[in-house]
Length: 253
Ligand SMILES: Nc1ncnc2c1ncn2[C@@H]1O[C@H](COP(=O)(O)OP(=O)(O)OP(=O)(O)O)[C@@H](O)[C@H]1O
Image 1: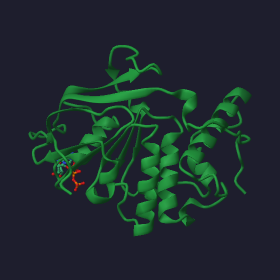
Image 2 (image 1 turned 90 degrees about the vertical axis):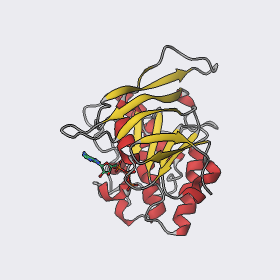
Image 3 (image 1 turned 120 degrees about the vertical axis):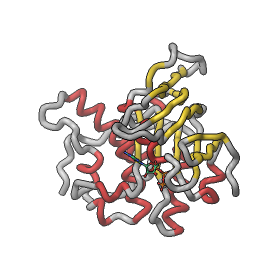
Image 4 (image 1 turned 60 degrees about the vertical axis):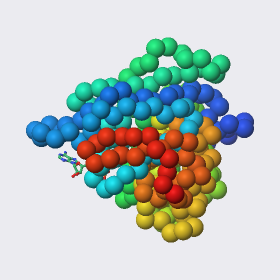
């Protein structure tokens, strides 16, 4: 059986993230990127912003630079010029302070085929990988337990045993688990690279339904070729063209 680092607490209320209602609007300002040691810009003057609690989709041909863009947002590489910042809003809907650079630790990212990177042999250890255990104070343990419960509940995994081997879950449940891991810290922005890739039709429908649910509480930016299935969720969409240029455009579906 998995050894729980702390007792699970129950979280009540209608909003899954109501304890920390921070909304944020991520913005790209004239971002260009050229990998070190190369002469070609993979991104060229990319500017766009995504309204808070909305679903943005980036589409475009293979090799146009979509994944490169996500890697910059996640802080895995740094823009050669331009900036990626975030404007936060309070519960009253007013901007909290002047825009600040988007801290990479406030971005949740689910890469393509996230289940390939599962490391633990039970669901609890997978979600709490790297968390403090024995040495954590009681107060911290309670906070973490509450975050764990909220993340698991928000993706609809509360019905499954935390002892279960993540690798034995169905395709759709593996994606739910990958999302739960990213939702623990309530990110300012959740980015997903091809969230439906490799799933059967039932799991795809399941993930679409879950993303629709998450959109009520979070700002999501998705890169995908599955335009038709995601279209009902999309608030803003951009086409990435060869040469790393982005243009706002309705989905061609
Ligand atoms: N470090 C690098 N140095 C040079 N070229 C790179 C580097 N990283 C990526 N590229 C090239 O940049 C282009 C954009 O790649 P990227 O993976 O961002 O495209 P993509 O739109 O996500 O493609 P796909 O839809 O196939 O995932 C590709 O031609 C890729 O080969």
